[in-house]
Each structure stands twice: as structure tokens, then as C-alpha cells.
Image (tube, rainbow, N blue to C red):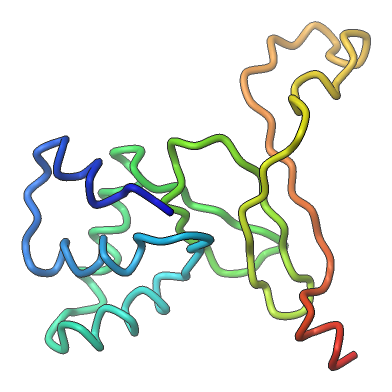
Length: 139
């Protein structure tokens, strides 16, 4: 479960009605919504919320480092509230659904010293691709 709402409160970030509902939409496990999905879900809770408010708030949250923008295979950007917990992603090549996964070993250790070519590696991004059960059943 994401701790986004608590992190924003701890930070003293001003939670207007619009910001609060956006943070509530993003708060959860395996959340990776597009901006349009965030808007649609937020509008169910707060019908007057504008698309501009959603885009602006998402931009602010990314700039604060409280959510991460994730883009795969040229699809629409998705927003991940699990920004403070190291994890990788599993992506359905059919529908684009994304799930957080925890590796059992350090992904940094998977890159041998001889393959680093002198780079001081600071982060690793591993993405697994496959088909979710629904897409696999329809194939």
C-alpha cells in the first residue's frame, strides 16, 4: 500500500480538495494510472475537478519526488505513488497493465564490474514484459 497521503501531510503540502482527491486516487497498491485515468477517477469523487488541475498536480508531485512518471513502449505516461520503495515493474504487452514487483536479489549486482565500462552506476530500472491473465486468455 502506498503511503502517499501520509507523506504529503508530513511534508506540510497544502491539501486542497482537488489535491486531496488526486492523492487519494493515487494512494493504493499497484497503482499506475495515466493522467486521464486519474482525472476520471477523481471526477467521480469531485465532479468539478478540471483536467488542468490533475495535470498540474501530477507535475507538482513528480517535481516533489512523491510520485514517479513511468513510460513503457511509447504508451501514455503512468504515475506511480510507490516512489520511496525500491521496486521494478511487470507490464502487460497487451493492455499495458502494470504491477510492482520486488526482486529477490540486488539488481545492481546483476551488472558485472567488467560490463560497467567505468560508469558509476547510480540506479537500475528493470521492466519485465508479458501478458496478464486476461490478455493471455483472450489470445
